[in-house]
Amino acid sequence: MNRYWSPLVHKLDPYIPGEQSQEADLVKLNTNELPFPPSPAARDALRAACDDDLRLYPDPTAAALRKSIARLCGCELDNVFVGNGSDEVLGHAFRALMQEDRPILFADVTYGFYPVYCHLFGLTYQHIPLTDHFTINIDDYLERPAGGIVIANPNANTGLALPRREIERLVRARRDCVVLIDEAYVDFGAESAARLVSDHPNLIVVQTLSKSRGLAGLRVGFALAHPKLVEGLTRVKDSFNSYPLSRIAQSGAIAAIEDTVWLEETVHRIKQLREDLTHALEARGFTILPSQANFIAARHTNIRADELTRHLRKENILVRHMETQRIADWVRITIGSEAQHQRLLTALDRLLQTG
Ligand SMILES: *Cc1c(COP(=O)(O)O)cnc(C)c1O
View 1: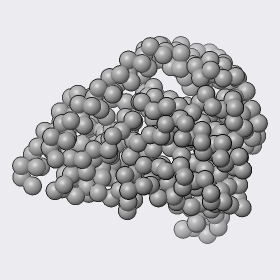
View 2: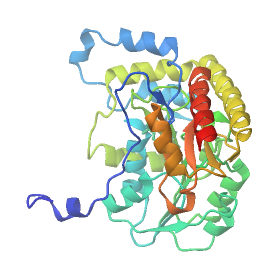
View 3: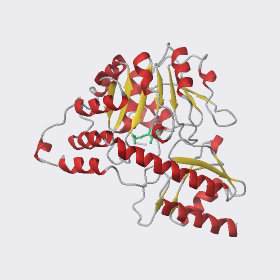
């Protein structure tokens, strides 16, 4: 608290990201980063971009990057918006496209940033409970008044995904508001709604280079939407920061987007590792939700999630314990490398023997 703060700042309830420790020898399975380095082509492009042109401002419209994304996603340049991580894109979308006079609808278990944006921008929201199986039921979103609807697909913290036809059913039924689909994890096995944007003026699909492309440190995210929605986002962006992406970020992101072979191989490896880890944990008495993301939600019959998280932290292994009431029994474990999984399983075996 401070008397120079604005009333708004006193009331804010900021998002708390997972621990980013600098400690060496840490098995970091808490923030859904890739265990592998990003595409070599992207790294070459990043190095090459560190040249004399850095004295110049970057292209404020990031046209070359948006063109690459449009080609990848099979849409047009004016369907694409880019930002400094998808968190920024989401923030602009809440500001530009969500209405104040009705609540924003999102699940009670989902990405923790959505209520934070609502507080920041003076929006109200309503949590829609997941079903007893932790799935999202689209029928729950069809009738209520809504100033906007936000669905993470696959959902954050559960990893469960909806098929595209369910997203389409929602978008068709809710012409009265914008439907935002947050596809941070979509490359790991879910169906993208990207191809629906050309037919639906109220749909916005948000993706990121932080997860499947292993570039969390670069901060690049993007949205696909009707040109009028993109124009709304751009109006907010240009009222806040005209140059959210550096020359370096734009160059690296283009190379990363175009390296589709690297992406395919990486996704294949993560899926294999996800399957292996799921079986290994099930063999140790864990229940695992069937994930289409690069993390799994796990619950043990005998050990509480907070106890498990604390024990693993002592062994230099970070996993994420969600404190949300609904999922307080569960830990979220990022899919790591084989060596990281081995460390995790060895630590669990020790705990299960003594516990
Ligand atoms: C990680 C994540 C983001 C944010 O990604 P950045 O592009 O790194 O800002 C957004 N939404 C969900 C659901 C995420 O898990």
